[in-house]
Every structure is written in structure tokens, then in C-alpha cells.
Amino acid sequence: MKTKTKNRIQAIAILALGLFLGWLIFGVSGTTENEHNHQELAGETIWTCSMHPQIQQSESGACPLCGMDLIPLEEDQGGDPTVFVMSENALRLANVSTMIVGTDNAERTIRLNGKVQVDERNSYSQTTHIQGRIEQLRINFTGEKVSRGQTLAQIYSPEMVTAQQELLQAYVIRNSQPELFEAAKTKLRNWKISNAQIDQIIANQKPLDRFTIQADVNGVVTKKNVELGDYVERGMSLYEIADLSKLWVLFDVYESQMNWVNEGSKITFTVNSLPGETFEGTISFIDPLMNAQTRVATARVEVNNKDGKLKPEMFVSGTVQAASRQTVESEMILPKSAILWTGKRAIVYVKEGNGFALREVNLGSALGENYIVKSGLSEGEEVVVNGAFTIDAAVQLSGRPSMMSPQGGRVNTEHNHGDSDLEKVPNISEKVKLTNDAKIALQPLFKNYFSLKEHLAEDNFENALISGKNLKDALGKVNMKYFEGKSNDVWMAFDKQMKTALESANDQKKIEGFRSQFQTISDVLIQFIEQTGPYDDVIYVQHCPMANNNQGADWLSLSKEIKNPYFGSVMLRCGEVTDSIQ
View 1 (cartoon, rainbow, N blue to C red):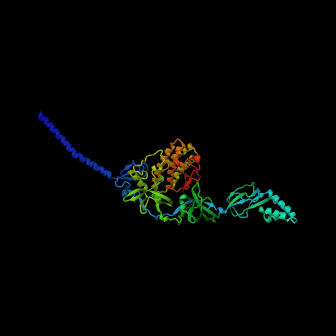
View 2: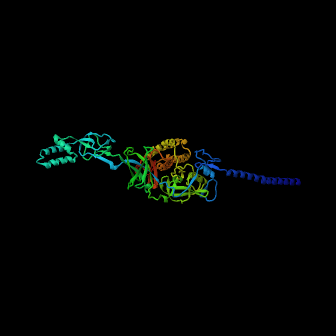
View 3: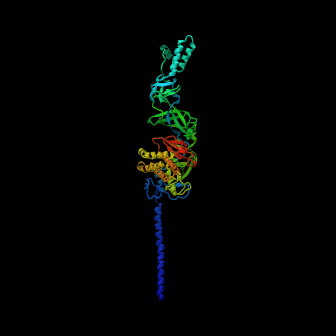
């Protein structure tokens, strides 16, 4: 019995030892094989969406949620955490291009907008030298041409009848009292009665009851101030007459452009209503006073208009060469396409070795399609000018310091209700061009935005909520098929930002909260229009320095007139025009 028990124990021990050895041999080998397979999978490029990082695929393509091109999800590369390295394939797919910044890339042109106006020196107010009642008007509408000496009106004047009777009485006693006769004639001459008319009165021995008012100058009637039967006083204006053979073109020069525009600068301009024609001129005068409301000064160009093509109030767009006295060549220039804007911060990506590093730059004045760089870059550095947003999106997904997260860490791309800080919303800086179909599709969006702005300026919270809902509905009805390529990227970023802001705005219970969200709505729309313009209408960017707790806030308007949507009737006229988008 003891022998059997001992044999069983030995058998169990041998079996246990065999199982253990088998696990060591086959178990470890299997684990190694699995790990090897996992590493092979990990070595493959994973493609993800910058807007929806939960999307991860093994092949490139479009995001199934938003349609944006997928980007490679890079593994942790070690080394300097501020430098992000992308594979050659990823760089090619992102269409990344760079340039070496320097001082020889300046585009020395400034774009100005303005209007054709009447030359003030050729504008004349036709007054009456006789008081009385208007019995006849020969010029009955504005725009009619008149010639010097042409009869404009006839006036009946009881006072003139009395003065003529005095003349006839003095004529009878002219031999005995010649001084009285001369005084009577002088009185009539002071009323612009000619010597021929005086002789006619004396010859007929009968006072004239009607007197004509003749044009003093040649020109076009720009304003008619009286009607038939009106009683007029001496010196009263009957018509405004202007000579339109010479006109002024008045351009708006913003504060930031003042350093680049001088008297004597050559300017080339086009007129919206005369496509295909180009005009040239010289800036002859710049207003020394700046408009306190719009923050612009006026630059004047005198033009010859003998052919009559130009008409007052026509809109014009011009480009002027930067003044020669400005040392543009000594300034470092950076293309606008290289810049990523996050609120007031300007970000670029600089090539360092095989990777790219984020850099914040301080910008000066805009110069055409470039900005002057005050600090942050050195001459000879290589900067990304195309594809910067795609690089930044990949940097965000890797958890490194990025545009939206300067301290590093992945950026939350979910909706962020109640937060109006635009810096937490992705931004695309590359300028894109929209098709006419896309612009037409956007019209209801703009219409509802401007309606919303008007209701806020009127303190009408109920209608503002309606306009906000209409704006959201209009946004949802825009067909994405009109946006292709880069315009699709811009549209998807804009669509996400706008939906987030509108959802939060429409949840507000008071107008104060709605106005706070209106700031984000406006900022998002301003960025979108600047990236996708020009549009048919001139759109003005207006700014209130007291909104947003005295930090300032912007909005868009179709006119220069200030109607503050952030304060309404409390400070309706508080604000200024800071830019125009055409």
C-alpha cells in the first residue's frame, strides 16, 4: 500500500513538472510571437482625423464624420518635445511647403477702398438775389445739365416792384436831383438788375413784375432745394450745381496703413461698375484729421472725367505702392498663409532639423499679402507657408505643445458649451477661394447674422433668439458639395465652431448671456470671411473697446454706421470701423 501511494506521488510530481516545462517552452514562445505580431501592427501608419481623433484607420482617406482628409498619427519620437517630426509620406499628403524668410520678399502694395465724390472746389450753390415768390421753375429735376447764363427760375417780388416805381419817380426829377436818380439805379444793380433791364424799365415807364434767376456756372444740378410757389429770401439756395468734368476719388486709409501711404503716392484703381477698366492717379492730399468713429483718414485723388464714365458715389478699389521713403527692404516679411491666429496670438511653424517647432511671432503692419515681423523670427529661418494647420492638428493629437495647447496635452475637440474663448477652437489660416455656388449657398447665413446683429442693437431679445435659431437652421442647410479641397477643410472648421457657439447662444435665458456668445459667433464668421473672401458687398469689421469686460469685441456690418450689438441703446454709437472686407 505504501509503495502504491509513493508511486502515485511520484507520477503526480512528474506530470506537474512536465506541465511546467511545457508552459515555459510553449507559453513563452507563444507570447513572443503575439508580441511580434503586435509590434508589426504598431509599425503600420495609423490615420486619424484632426477634428475627430476617435477615428483611427490603417489607410489614408477621408473622415467618415466630416469628410476632412485623414492625417498620420505619429508615434512618440523622443528627443526634443518641442520639435515634431513627420514622415515624408505625411508631408507629401499634407502638401507642406516652406520658405526661407528674409528681407527681399516684400510685396509693397497696399489695398484701399473708396468712393467717387464731387470735387468740392467745383461745387456751387445757386442762390437768389431777389426775395419773392417763385412763379416758374425751368429746372425741375436733379441731374439736369445747365449752362452759365441759362434761366433757372422766375420770381415775382413786390419789393422789386416798389424799387422800380422809385426809379421811375427819380427819373422824372433826374435833372434837379441827379443823386437820387443814381441811388435808385444803384439799388437795382445791387439786386443784379442789369443796366439793359434798367433802361427797359425807363423806356416802358412800367415796372417789371417778374425777374429771372440765371445760372452763374456750368454744371449738373445735384440738388434741388425749392418747389414752384415757394417764397424765398435773398441769399437762399435754389440749386446745388457741380461741374463733374473733374472729380475726387476719396480712399479710406486705416491707422495701420498710414505709414505706407503719402501724398504723391501713385495709385491704380478699378471701379466695381466698370469691369475690365483700370484708372491711375496720384494722391494729392491726405486729411490731417482722423475720423474718431471709423478710425480712418481720407486720401484724395483728383481725376479727369471729361468722358463722364465716373459718377459720384461709385465704389472703387485701389492699390498703392508703399511710399518710397519707407525702408521696406529692412523689414522682415512673412506671408499671411504662414500664420495661424488664436485670438491675439500669431503662431508659425519653423523647420528645425527633420521636424517643425511652434513659434509665436509679433507682427507689425499688413503689407499686401504679407505681414511685417517685429520679433520671433530670424533672417534665414525656414517657415511653413502651406500646410501649417495640418501640422498643428497632428501636433495636437500627439499631445505636444500646439497652437491650442501651448503647454502640451491633447486638445479636447468635443463641443464646448458656454465658452466663448475662440483660442480653444481650431483655426485654419490658408486663404481659399469659394465657388459662386458656395457663395450663393452662404447668403441665408449672412442674412440671418445681420438680422441677429440688428435685433441685439435694438435690445430685442425675443427676435434675437428667433434670428439665432434661423442662423443655425441656415447653417445646417448649406450643402457641403459646394466645398472641395481646402475649402472643405475651412468649411468643416467653421461649421464646428459656429454650431458650438449657436447652441450655447440659443440656450441663454437673458440677452446679456446671448450677447456674450454673439462675440464668438462674430469672431468665427470674421475668420471665415477673411479666409474665403472677396464677396460682392463690402463688409465692415467694427469694434467696441468696452465690450467683453473692457477687453473689446468685434462684429460685422454692411454699413459704416455704428449700431453696437453688445450694449444696444445704452451705448448704441460706441465703436469704430477697424477693417473692411471686399
